[in-house]
Amino acid sequence: MRPLVFQRHPFSALAILIFLSLVALPTLAAVRLSGVIPGSIAPSVLIVFSIWVYFLLAYDKKRALTNQWRVPESTLHFFEMLGGWPGSFIAQRRFRHKISKTSYQFTFWIIVIAYQVVAFDFLNDWKLSGFVMAFVFGHN
Image (cartoon, rainbow, N blue to C red; front, side, top):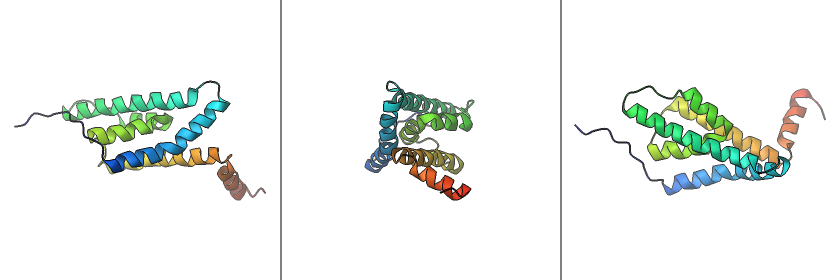
């Protein structure tokens, strides 16, 4: 019987392209936001949470391989919402962890899409939000 091994998998060219496409808008928004917030807090927060989630997923994968207590998915999603979704994207592919669990992926991609929409709206001076608010509340 072969022992359990914690393997790291290489990234495909497609995964790299998808990752770069997904981080483009939020990165531009974070850079623009750093002009509003003193210092480079916005980009730094995203980087810190991405690193944190990456290591949380690596830890969870190791625990899964040895049938030990796992990191709750709600915890992983919480830190993804705080800005760690890029680290999660990388870790999921690197460790082949959580990539086939539909319920996890659904929530993960909702978070990623929300980041894309908010970044796009922020970069367009909140025009999308203004349109939605006017539509919902009937203001001109």
